[in-house]
Image (tube, rainbow, N blue to C red):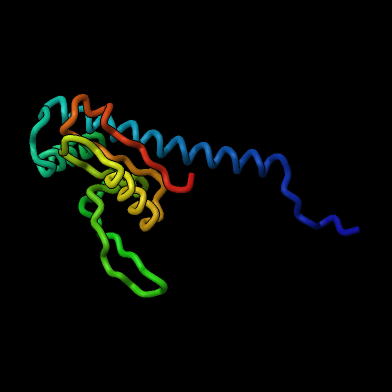
Length: 149
């Protein structure tokens, strides 16, 4: 009888579950800070501006909250093994884990949600926030979308 076979034990299972919970907690903590930044931007600027004004103010808020972010991030895609090149630019990627798409429109549509889900799938990120600054209050116009969670 071979006693060297490695079998997962309760400790391994606990570690895996704990790691998954910590990962989700980190993403949720980022989304909390991101939403707080959006609320502050709308509180100061109000509604009715162009998306570019909200994006500039949102970047300032993220920086003040000491969140790492990139703006206008190019995302490439492929089709049947062929490169399609850059297929879109994410408005923001925060902490290398959350795509944030900003809008300044009367209402968000299913197309906006479908686009963000496609962006998540192509970037292999799991969490996206779709934020519409032209509707008040902004907190009721933020859609949290997940990819394969």
